[in-house]
Image (cartoon, rainbow, N blue to C red; front, side):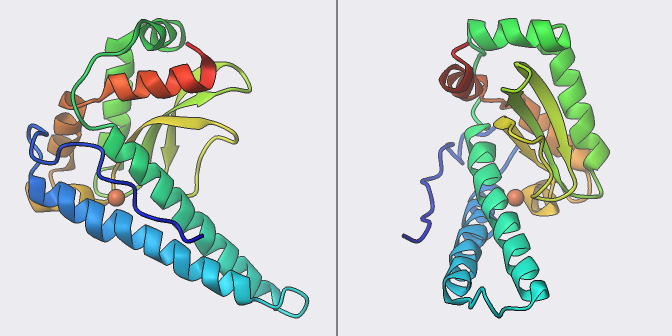
Length: 196
Ligand SMILES: [Fe+2]
């Protein structure tokens, strides 16, 4: 079964400080592009003669499959992350334990986004089931994540996320993103994964 686009989970006309145009373009071109690329790669993998294919062909296709798959999944969390709302008591309590509170976590998460400005990558708030902790993770492309960790919030630092609205001023985009944090969506994910 080919992968399909999930409907846009945020209301693109209601994200303060970010234009409908950039969010819709991001959804259609970048997220949509990742989904159609993933389907094209999977079609090639289905045709591959695994017994005779050279290592570089296998490596190339499997690497690109991972890039496209993670890009698709992280973009889905990214669009879910937009839409200002409050954290549940469970998420709030866990942020207290692991970061010393929501306010401290916010400062760290935004600083990581701004540190990636001018480059590209992802900042992800993830739940690590191995050690029962929330962690802010850094990734310079779509493939770098803590092993086994589950994304709760994702901040996309690729230029396509903000250039249309803010030019090179990535920091203003991070500030707008932080004003629109959908903490209720993150709380729901945390409850489903960790029961918190
Ligand atoms: Fe993106």
